Amino acid sequence: MSGQQELLRSLPAVDRVLREKPLQDLANLLPQEILTSAAQQAVADLRNQLLSGNKLPDKAMGPLQVAVSAAALCQPYLQPSLRKVINATGTLLHTNLGRAPLAKEALRTIQSVAEGYSTLEIDMDTGQRGERYSHVRRLLTQLTGAEDALVVNNNAGAVLLALTALGKGHEAIVSRGELVEIGGAFRIPEVMEAGGLQLREVGASNRTHLKDYQNAITAETKILLKVHTSNYRIIGFTSDVSAAELKPLAEEKELILMEDLGSGMLIDLTPFGLPYEPTVAETVKAGVDVVTFSGDKLLGGPQAGLVVGKKELIERIGKHPLARALRIDKLTLAALESTLRLYLQPEQVVENLPIMRMFNAQPEEQKRRCQKLLDRLQAEDLPIKLTLIEDFAQVGGGSMPQVQLPGWALEIAVDDSSVDALARRLRGFIPAVVPRVQNDSLLINMRAVAEEEEAVLAQLLIAAIRSGD
Ligand SMILES: *Cc1c(COP(=O)(O)O)cnc(C)c1O
Image (cartoon, rainbow, N blue to C red; front, side, top):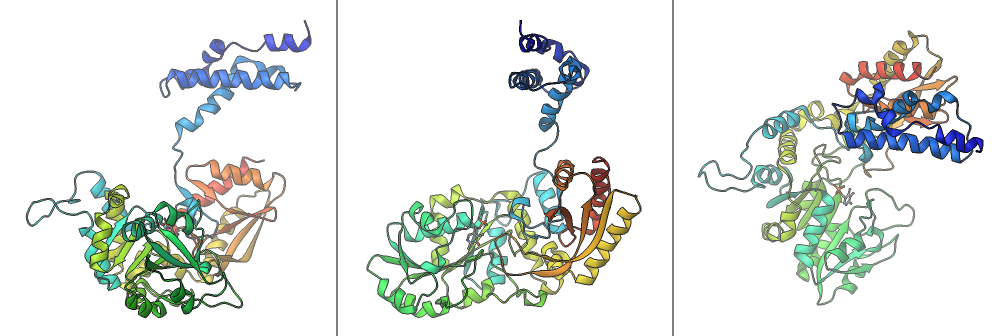
């Protein structure tokens, strides 16, 4: 018998592995099938290693060691996969990390609506069936000046719904400079196709003129669509036609003027050093008939798609079967209503809405917070080099890609262990920590880290650095 065959025969049996303590300890936490398949997997991994000629220490083949590996394979079942992250990347509306953190007030409302029954669809005056949108309609019309409003699951859904309900079987005209891809295969041409609309592209990527729209209108045209080019910029020799400029044309030809604002904002954000963009109210005032925007971008609320505009059009949108398919759930609605309510007192929004607090964070304050973290880590005598550096934060979520919010970061350079391994250990914690990895060091940008997360962040950094020794 060859040496390899002999080794293969000495692999522990799955039954034997299952009797070892690491798996026995999991017996009343996880179903037997999961433990068995983990043990089979661990044995199979060893077999594959032997077959590919790897030399393994004897100890690795012992039943106990195999059971330890099998127990590690069970870990994903024992901790929540969707869990809290401390976002130290400096990207505030990080789409992969869940975009906007919610206001305290929104969390309280979610809790109270989630733990029992609610007024979701009941008219409390009459006791009769009510309407889901009613909870945010008055707030949204008040805050945007629109005649009517409705909300759905997300803005991609809002765009698809509005186009389908208003334009199916007809043509919509869009500038070539606005045929954007938002990410995750959400591209305007494909949304049009899905909604059963014929897309008429006009102009060139960098320049579109009013006459381009004029010349493209046919008897089939129903919608003039403007799309915010949120996540990219065309610079240089450019021109586009604003919604206000399109309005007279839309009126003359009796077309619907629609604008997808992407991250629409309810208040002017220039006081925070962000570039000027028309608010939703200004867009409505410019005469746009239907405006769509996201709940969890610059608005700072939960994932949702908001649609505001002319009453007759919003009603048509609300009656379309897709509206039911895309309907907003009660927890989101609770969070959205609370978030919108905060905007009734614009002077307190900075205090109450986390995303506004982050925009408003001053470089000096961030330097102080980074210094505090530095001092805390310095006291531990760790094998690292700590430096305060000037750093920029980004808005994220595809919003305002050109904006760099000035501030500070703590740079952590590790002596021995690799920076990627350190970042991986940080991601494994509960809560997980996601820093920025840059030039062989970790950057901790505090702008998206809440004050109450600071102490835990320091502890987790220390633990991750220590366990790499
Ligand atoms: C982000 C964005 C969307 C999609 O919004 P979600 O809320 O992510 O569904 C659609 N259009 C534009 C212009 C956007 O920026």
